[in-house]
Amino acid sequence: MRQLVILCMFFSLLVACSSGPESSDTEKKEIFISAAASLSGALKKISEDFEAEHPNVNITLNFSGSGKLAQQIQQGAPVDVFLSADQNWMDVLEQDNLILPGTRVNFAKNSLVFISQKETDKKIHTLKDIDPGSIGQIAIGNPKSVPAGNYTKEALTNLGLWDNLIEHFVYAKDVRQVLTYVESGNAEVGFVYGSDLHRTESVQVLTEVDSDLYSPVVYPAAVLSTGESPELAKVFLSYLQSDSAQAVLENYGFMNY
Image (cartoon, rainbow, N blue to C red; front, side, top):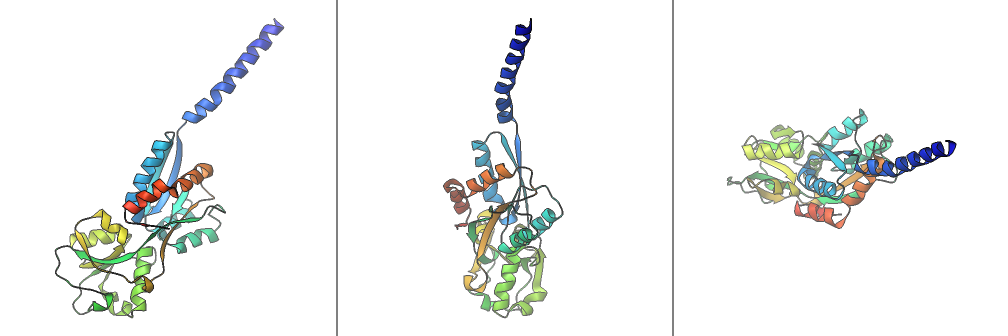
């Protein structure tokens, strides 16, 4: 009888050991990613490709202005990975010890363009051609929370135009809203990223902003120290730097870092 009990216990242990890994492999895992609004198209595609390679992973995406997302993280939002459109907001989180050390990487670059509706006959070859007396409303991201708006302010300030145009600005919560304002005619012109041109066929580029007028538009990413899936987040961050993910970013108008 004693041998039978021992045999049963041994058999139960074997079943437990063999079934444990199988159940953990099939268990659905979550990654929560907060990313700059300008990344929405490319990151949706990259996330779909990542999920296809990792069937047990489900990615939840949250897009907005980088500043707003950083503030959400500071307030305790459950985020595993943060992708910013500038270094400043990533610096803020790093200073607050909200970034997992050693995980911060730069993964893409962008440019700034000045746009209008496609039907307009307005001709502006350089920003110096902007006439405050004849220009209508200008849509820009709010410089306090939207990196594209901050880059715009930097460029216009360096040209001595910011103060002269300030009454014309319509502030948007992110670059997607800037694009919507111009598409709908609620703003005559606006400043967006070069990659945003892949979202619509309803606008045209009046001029590309001279890159010497503003800081380089470099996108950093990092795993957050407060996230619930740091190891899985690191796997995603590694994938973001892969050739396949970089090809997707390039297809959506970003430049490889």
